[in-house]
Length: 336
Image (cartoon, rainbow, N blue to C red; front, top):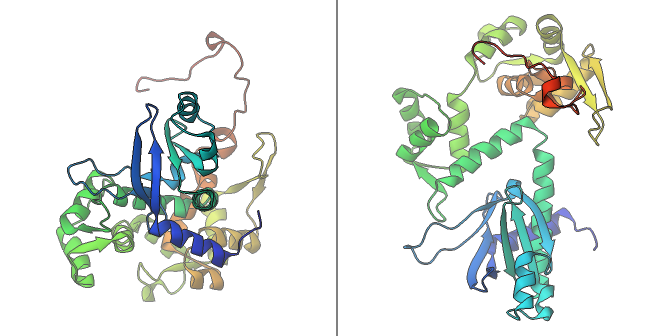
C-alpha cells in the first residue's frame, strides 16, 4: 500500500467522522446495523443511537484499542462460518477491533472492501499517532482530561453545562475551585456551557501550581513585571535550577527500551536544557525563544525522568526476581 500524504489522511479521517453503516456480528448470530463514526475529537469511535430508551452508545477509545484484525480471524467469525451464518466471500469486508487489553472485542462487516480498508487504515493511523503522543506527559494529561469530559457528555452532545463542569471537576479530578473563580471564568467566556477546548482552559486555569511559581521567581529575572501567566525561565536559569536544586540526571534509553541498554547522563549544558524545553513546553513562541513557562516547568518536573523514584530502578527489573518468594525479604513497616 502506498503511503498517503497528510492531506489524504485528513480526508480519510473526515470520511470516518461522517461515518457509515457497519454490521456488528454477535457470537450467537445476531446482527446489529449501526451508523458508526469517528468523533470529531478523534478520541473515540461510537455509533448513533436512534432509540433513546436504549443505553447510551458504547465508545471505543483510540488509546485503548489493542489491535485491528483483518478478515475472519476471531472465534466469533469462526463460529458463524462453521454454522453457515456467514459466507466465506464476506471475509473481504470483515474486520475486528480488540480493546481494553483484549478483554473487549467487536466484529464488524462493511458494505464492501473499500469501506473496510478506509476504517482499518484510519484507525491504525490514529492508534500510531496516539502511541507516539503518549510518550509525552503533556498530551497524556490532555487525553485523560478529554476522555473524562467525553465520558459524561450525552449522546452526540459536545458540551457540558455549568453544573456538569463543576461536578466533573469535583468527582473525577478532585479539584477544588472557589465559587468566585468558577463564576469569573464563565463570565469571561459569556456562556453557560463549555465545549472540550474551553473545559481544558478552565481546568488549566484553576490548577496552576502556585508553589512552582514561587520557585521559578527565585531564578527568573524581572519578576516584578511578570504574572503567573507570563513568568518564564530561560535555558540558563532552568539549568541553574536543575543543578542547584535537583542535582538532576537524565535517563537515556534506546527505542527498543532494553532493560540493559541505558546510560545516565548529567545535565550540565544549555543544549541539554533546550532539548528539555522543546519536549515539555507547549507554547510555540516560548519554544522558539528557548524559554519554559510555568506549565512547561510543571510538566517537566512531573515526567518520568524527574520523579523521586529512581527511573533506572522503577522502570526495569534490575535484581534477580526468579527465586521462590520465600527467598526474599520484604521491606515493610508499621503503616505498610
